[in-house]
Image 1 (cartoon, one colour):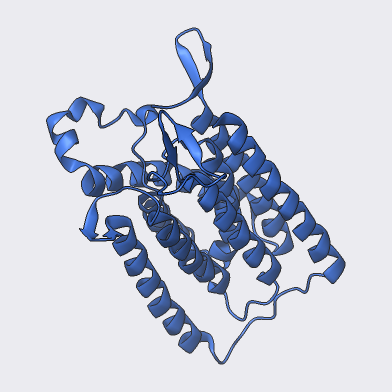
Image 2: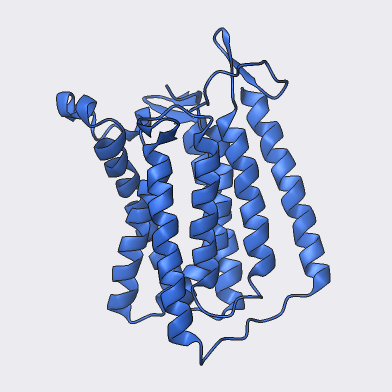
Length: 277
């Protein structure tokens, strides 16, 4: 059940929806900065972002239906489109967005990997912020640690907080390394691998369908994504080894300023999360 912030007549504004919107807005801001830095066509970047968001929502829903709870939706087909009740898989969303982005850039004859690098920091920042309003908590704590969240009569692992922290860390890594890439696609593939590892860690504190204990379907998906990303990374490196790129250097002063902002944003996000739960 989604936490409702307020209602406007027949419409309700949920906590999760609000932070998803804020995450998208923050992602667009970061994407715009990177598009300017890399001198990308901003109209094409904006169009690709919009198509990718729609594809991510559809992919997230379809993956959840097919992998996490197919039996329920076979019995209740009318609820397939009821995404406001929850039931979205971030991994499915990522797969859906990548597929649509690939076809879009091929049609427009754009450089997929250069665009992907610009998108990578924006995506993970949006994910970090979006998790603030998520109400899918972790499993019950065996011992009541002070950072636990009391829901009903149980103290649960704050799985959202764990993922917020890990995603901000990954954002900081990508943001600091974006001027260190040796080839187009490197930053995006680091993101793919890093986020899959993040999700794999958090999954140990959540309850999802098991493949074999203690590994869930999300663990299996993360493993497949990491393997595919590793293969692609190897192929790209071999293909461009004789024509590496030189990324535009970013000053130490700017990096220190940005890292301070990221640290403050992480703390503020956690405070916001705990203010609601």
